[in-house]
Image (tube, rainbow, N blue to C red):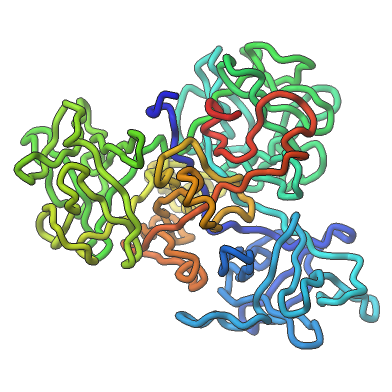
Amino acid sequence: MLLREIQFPCVENPPSCFLTFSDVWTHLSCNPSDGSTFMSKNRLGWEKWEIIVQDHNTGHSLIKHKASSRLLSADSDGNIYTQEAKDGTVADSSALWIIQENIVRSVAHSNLNLGAINTRGDLTPKVSPDNKNHAIVEYITGELCFFSSPDHDRRMSCGPMGKMSMSPNWKGWEVFRIIDVGDGSRHVRITSWTHDTKVLCHADQGRVFTSNNEFGMQSKWVIERPDDDSKGVAVKSAHFGSYLSYNGESFVMEDSIDKCTLWDISSAHQQKYYLSSVCHDKRIGYDNSKDSIYCSGKRNEWEAWQINSEGDGLVSFKSCVDGGKYLICTNGGKLKASHEWNGEALWKLEYSPHGGIFIISRNHDWHLSCDGQRLDISPSKGIGQTWILEPIMPSTISMDQITMYSSIGAATVALSVAMPFAIMGIIGGMGFTAGGISAGSIAAGMMSAEAIASGGGVAAGGTVAVLQSIGASGLGAAGFAGAMGAGGVIGASGGVVAMAVMGKSEEQKNEGTSSSSNTNMAYCNWRHWE
């Protein structure tokens, strides 16, 4: 296995979802002004919830309303309400839930399902043993990737009008979201990152298109690797069994696999990060004109680094500046840049109790340090030696934003502005295998002692969290599950999230085709699927 081929996945975190009552196709909603819950046909902000794992062993989780940060709860009679999230305190059982095979179960009520009862003609959410119409978790976040055709050197793109095409670019319109359906199957949905309501679909006559919020069988796919020597994965219709193909002119569905049906899936952030100090709004930069490492308050090309896995739990940092050099710690204990890759360029990543990671020189066992003015290495392990990794996403803009900016005569300026999203760039931890997590599944945010002991199931990374309006952005990383329960952070602070690789059962592994499929690895690491 070539370690440099291993990619660190880019995953949205925490997982967001709709709580959908599929029998009547309604969603649980919450009024942010008073916290009251009700049933809604809409799929807007009030209907979005986040899943925050609280206990990695039991799977106990909080379900937080995205618009109000209130916690979904059930009283002693099973009535559903929301309560304010309190920082630094552990939620009682009324606000704890378990999600199993997409079904929401109340911890306070012995894992009875969250359902809905008919009250005088109106559906009312309630935990009850008599519930037949139960809520399912419909994930809307996942792993962010490029889909490239090796045969045409082009990428799938969902342009400003939401129409599918192929493009030579590596920008935001070319980024797609892979979402596990979450029902224990291998089915996924593929949506545009920029136009998050646009879902990739197919029809029985081979037509490929995008549709708004389509969640039927025509939107379900299976991603599998045909064989060990293939140049890509096949994207197969879960309903018809045909394969997504690009013939050089248009998207079509083919009955068999050939070179036109192969897709190279790669991570959306292309392994590029800013290395930011937790206690100072500063980053590590490289000035190639002076050949020097410096402390910077900016986020430009000079502050961008590509992170490579080097095996044995080690990484290297390579500057993204043209002719970029490696960040090294010399035998004299100095930070420099070098074209040579050797032991001085190797670093360890360890969790920091201050909401981030330590970056440690393998040769010296000293830590990268920042005092707000300069960079150094230090034997200390404090907040001044704590860093976050901010994944660098491509810029993008939606049609709604183009329309908005055009109305004020600013469309040209808007084209260079990045789309606001909460993104998690996942870095393979402690052994740096090709492992990731099932995109969008409840596995996101879970960590187990078994995964750590295996040396392959844990990933660490940083979140880019941005405000919901264009131009007003903050960068940071979500903290451990407790910090995530408080809503994460906006601004130049944050931490590390541990994520376990949750494998599937032997029955699931043996189900369907004999082709290799993603059972416990990130989609961008398809080359290493077994």
